[in-house]
Length: 509
Image 1 (tube, rainbow, N blue to C red):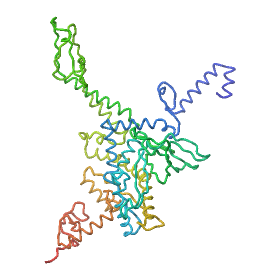
Image 2 (spheres, helix red, strand yellow):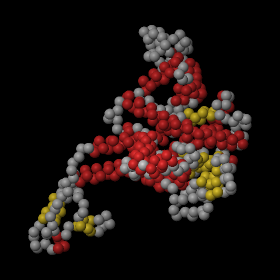
Image 3 (cartoon, rainbow, N blue to C red):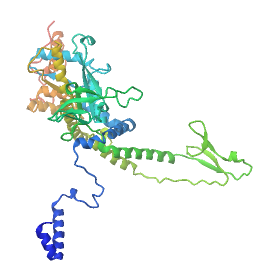
Image 4 (cartoon, rainbow, N blue to C red):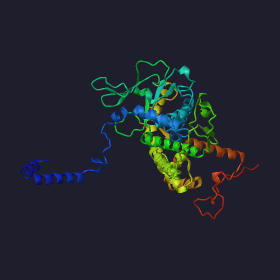
């Protein structure tokens, strides 16, 4: 209320009341509906806390519940498996771009040696570690990768003396919050300098949930150049990752309970039991009590129903059955919930359930487009930026220090070749790719890379194959150099079946 409203209200209360009511109405018209207070928003709790403050208190609970959903629900495990299968597949391949083919091949050779034995625990190769790290991000929200240098004697000759140890986010000492100096701080186990950049991580050497082991009293400081911290960053300033199932946790739990109730209801309806009531006064009290065997071997009054069960009632007892109502709406309700669950988890309905009854080529193709965009975002904006690129730079530096690779002022630039996306209809998709290459929308190396292959290696193999065919004098109709004009999609008239004059000729004996 301004000064004029107060003056009007003092001399003319009725007019002041009208002005106040009109002003409130005007403010409500001008404001957002979502910011209004009333009955509809009475239970709406919201906060303007920073990303780290919002995460700090709830993260351990979210993480433990997410792991429980992955362990004990089919859909939690399914979300994790589907996303990792598409994001990582059977592996992600680096493609060095030094501008020197010989040097590129040298880098590839050194990398292939290292990836086989890079696991600090000695069990997985590099592709297995990347898949495990992605699983951890989906389930726990984030993953740590400890880069550990080892003695050259611990590796084979020509192998970079570097190991990668994956750690669950529980290893971060979240209780280590303090102001170290006037500028540097530690927040949830991550140490920042005065400019807000990460300089170290405070890590528990032993998993805090490893019961029975001797736990260290203090966490250990690991510098940021020796630690990879990968998570999906959703807000500016967010320092920790949140489990991906967090938005659908309650809905998924309710859905699991509903599915269990439907199964129990069906089991009860399938039970055919007979109950016999006797008025024979000669039966002893012990004979009248009907018992069933407990899992521990003891006896108790019958409290469960089983198909074909026949039991006797005590004198004075009567059976009153509970007849559950029959409903045919369960499938519709479950399908609606599965659709919402799949959308919230970031995958499609058919990927979550395997239900393709109502799918066709167009619907599958359209559904996969958005999903592939989500996967590509994760691959290039999260996995590459936070995990693969920092790891590559460290590996190259250690390789140069070990004399395995020559020193270069520009380092070793790299591109990452992601796993191929399997087409819904291979013939239609291949024809579209051919036209895209011919029209110049994409190059042949880009086309090969989309299939998860290294274009340089592919050309080498093609050249070697052509040479082997010519040396042996073998002509196959699968040889692309034959270039039959009748091939569908060819540049010339399809009615002309003449063979290209550049096709290989068999050698004369």
